[in-house]
Amino acid sequence: MPDDPLLTVRDLTVAFETDDGLVRAVNGVSFDLAAGETLAVVGESGSGKSVGAMAVMRLLPSYAKISGSIVFQGTDLLALSDRAMRRLQGDAIAMVFQDPMTALNPVFRVGHQLVETIRVHNPSVSKAAAKARAVELLELVGIPEARMRADNYPHEFSGGMRQRAMIAMGIANEPQLLIADEPTTALDVTIQAQVIEVMKLAQEATGAGMLLITHDLGLVAGVADRVQVMYGGRLFETGDTQTIFYHSRNPYTRGLMTSIPSVAERTDHRLVPIPGSPPSAINVPEGCAFRPRCPHAAEQCFTEPQLVDVDASGQHRSRCHFVHELPDFDRSTAMGSSA
Image (cartoon, rainbow, N blue to C red; front, top):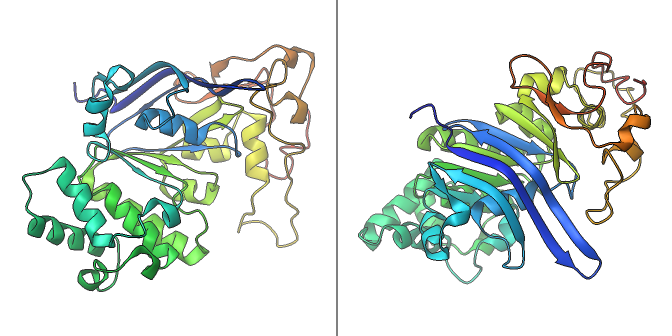
């Protein structure tokens, strides 16, 4: 049916056996993504954002223990053979990796790598046609003098140009699902804005659903339709972007919001950092994983809260014992008030 989600993830768990114990990088995460929609996944380092994306792409090492279901256009990706999954990777499902410095092969020209991406999934396409398409893609993402630049090696591109080339490679075969993992990492503010615009144009050109993995809340505000906030491998809050930014019902989400600057605030306004550090994936705190850092922590927080509906719509959900008792969200007091 046309209203069916493009991607449906249910109870996704990813664990790794280590010498120190079992690492649960992703723990029971569920979400849907519609065609043409952008879903941002945010959280501190170690929250499980990138591991979840790698699980969708089936790019995790063989020793990763994955359970749950990942259904793309009616097909359970976890049930596919490696060969069948490779047909989807880079074609119907594509990924823009977070480090363009290492994602591009330094010994091949940028145009050659784009041509290879196109022809490996469409062998009937001639080299000449693929080269023309590669130039067209480089033009689409804003590479100047694209025809000449296609013959350059990656080291001849700036960091921003390499990131644009990675976006071009991601959309080369017009994927239905595009996963962007920290696409603006290590780029200056001007280039970040340009890359964001390129991503919007690329999504409009392909009609793809986008899973955006980032810690950059400014980027989220500019491109995302919905947001899900992860902490300690679990989903802590989810909702549309406006709701998450201005009507959050979760202390951790509020902590993220108060720790970033806002152009609407006074220049002398002090940011409020989240105290402490993210939890170890091996020794997760008893009960709520955010309890040791939370200003609202109480006795019941030693019992793990469930992800519950905030309102009747079922679109805004939060994992907190005090979902309905938290005061209205105010950036200046969100981490300083008590439940």
